[in-house]
Amino acid sequence: MKAAVILLPGLNRDRDMIAALTKISGTPPVTVWQTDTAIPDVDLVVIPGGFSYGDYLRCGAIAARMPVLDAVRRKAAEGVRVMGVCNGFQILLEAGLLPGALMRNASLHFVCREVKLEVANADTAFTRGYSKGQVIRCPVAHHDGNYFADADTLKRLEDNGQVVFRYAEGTNPNGSMHDIAGIVNEAGNVLGMMPHPENLIEAAHGGDDGRALFESALDLAGVAG
Amino acid sequence: MIKARVTVTLKNGVLDPQGKAIEGALGTLGFSGVGHVRQGKVFDIELDHDDRARAEAELAAMAEKLLANTVIEDYTVSIA
Image 1: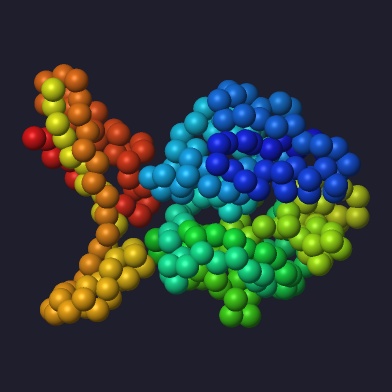
Image 2 (image 1 turned 120 degrees about the vertical axis):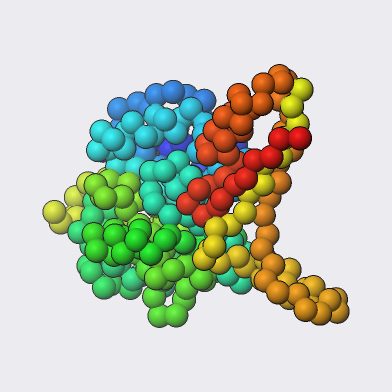
């Protein structure tokens, strides 16, 4: 499985993401710059975290209008797996690839700490390495992770099993509705999540709870289904 | 030249933590009787032509495509 990482000015988790993908798959991902209009033939496209365009206007708003996002949109329509983490999630929402919006944290504080995530749906391409209801550890680091969607959208997300990660055990760090930490699109091939699984993949991180997500998304051996 | 103002505000029902904080700070400063405070954004935009009908269409498109996130925000356009 080959992966691509999208690069935009102001992202700062790109190197962590590239390192995680390289360590887990054994192959470095290709990198694609914001002005590129095509993405090479890959099986997974990742938009990492950071502060693209300094969070000007709204988090992810400018990035979502760059040419490379049209290429991401085409890949998603072809069924290629697309994953956005943190600012990458904000960009996917601004690009209309996922429903809802991420607002300023309810506390108004930047939060940088570890939370617990409940795997709400383990039947997706990204989460089948976990079991439903499993609680994993994951770091978060964001100022605007407060998930909002209107009542109809929330109901649709819940009814379709599109909520894949929820903040568990009272660890909701940002006021997200329904404790939502990560969602997929209706087809199940686009994932957005605020927490950073790429920062918990090996002993040096203090745990490897995030590893199964990449192993699932990359179809690596040992993942069922 | 046309000078226009696009005002972007949060939709009713969307929680505004920043507005709440401002509301609290106004109370702290001694301003009594302050009800709800909602924070928004203002964009002053110059267009290099004088066609008002065209300007209205262009500004609405700008608001829809970039200036507002219509999932959470409404906008109004006024032309000077």
